[in-house]
Amino acid sequence: MRHLLALTIVCAVSLGTAAAQTLSLADRQSSKRYTVQELLADPATRDVTVDDVVYRRTMTYRAIPTAELLKRVAAGDDDYVQARATDNFSIAIPAQLLELATADTEAFVAIESPAAPWPALPRDKERKSAGPFYIVWRTSGAARISSEYWVYKLAALTVTDSPIKRWPALGVEASVPATDPIRRGLDRFVAVCMACHRFKGEGEGTQGPDLGMPMNPVDYFQPEALRKLLRDPRSVRHWPEQKMPAFSADALSDADIDAIVTWLSYKAKHR
Image 1 (cartoon, rainbow, N blue to C red):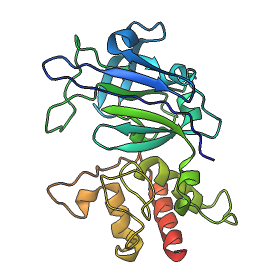
Image 2 (image 1 turned 180 degrees about the vertical axis):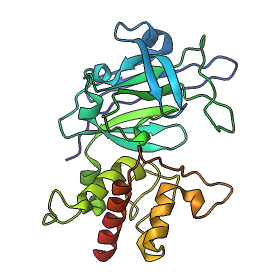
Image 3 (image 1 turned 135 degrees about the vertical axis):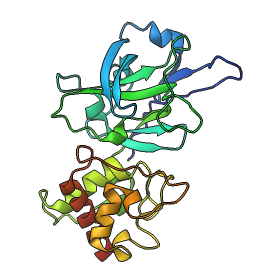
């Protein structure tokens, strides 16, 4: 049974120069809305300086730990949190990762103050910022946080089952060993690719094509071309509305790319 408790962020933008934004935390028993001013004054909110992978520079935010937010609802050990943005970007993040508060890793929801707006996002045609809410991460160099977990223009967070439980078409047979690259490929697909892509209709991504139907990419790409596409799409093909970014080796290693191709090949053989 799917987990029914939810944590939802609702962002309402008013007409005029000031934005009226609220944060709604909800589960089956209760629901409460917070204004930007209330969150900025929350005792758990503090200044956080991060090496921002979206702005590509050091940024300082007023932000509340996601661990603190998740204390206000119920999330099981195996649950995920589906983060949805106003531009339909959607990614599932392990709840346990959002609950971490260690020297190596800690996540925050940054809150944009109308009195101190953030700069425009790089290459944003509308010259808008990452706000009104934005998941940012304080990490050490050793921490592995998917670049897709930096969710800007955040609209909602929902506690839910893992992607594998929600979308069985992603899974692999139980006989596949835990250390097999197929499983690593599945893990990286969930953490990186599902933000924009569905697989055989399953998932929430709408920004890119479905990678399971009508054909699997391994059916129409040579292996080396597919690896180049995953590393940097513009090195293979280009069109005006192209959205998929290039991934650095830090964000997606060669071994990760090989594993994703291995998982796609496995799924192509197990239709």
